[in-house]
Length: 185
Image: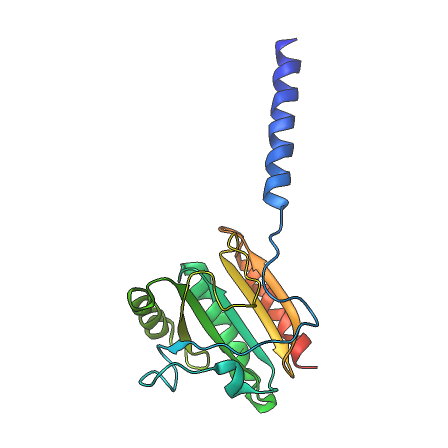
């Protein structure tokens, strides 16, 4: 009886754990939405010595991939490196992208971006900061999501993926990389 009860309890706990782990967070503008402009502070890109700018505006109708993150973790750095390579390979199609580190203290957050860009030799994706941990107004970024990736072309979202803490695995990074084809068609 004790063994049966213990097996049942273990099964219930495992089921609940899988349900929680499988819960996918929704964050960001969804497919078909129009991408509004917003300003960032460029930390590593071509405008790093200037004022705030709007990369959404600068890139116009080009295919764009953007990573919105709460912190520059090793996983976000790996995703950034992967997408930097994708952008480099698709420059002939005018593909562009940028990373947005959202923070209530962007000056304090900026050194992690510089360090990551130098360490991983990020050359195509400007690493930027946004003043405000909630992200740009109107972007519907879920506070529960640690990372949100949006891809758009002609100012219209084609892909929107969000990740909870610990969900940005090698397989997830490969999936996001493959999804860039949707903005290059």
